[in-house]
Length: 72
Image (tube, rainbow, N blue to C red):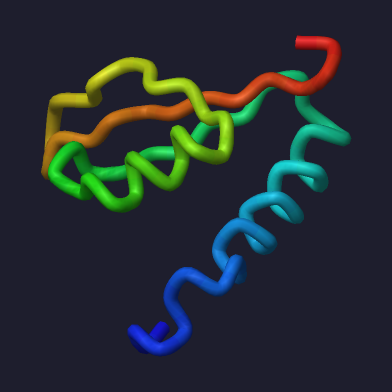
């Protein structure tokens, strides 16, 4: 996405659609991102995702975010 498309709500719209689709089937969903990606982490937290574990192992370190459905 080019910078002129940033901050227009498209990412939030796409994320909300993914959340609704997945939470219709699962009580809890998760995503991963890199801990040095402050913009992504801020975005996910603003969208109600909860920071969880830090994944260390093979490959780069990642962090996990989770979100629960209405029943979770």
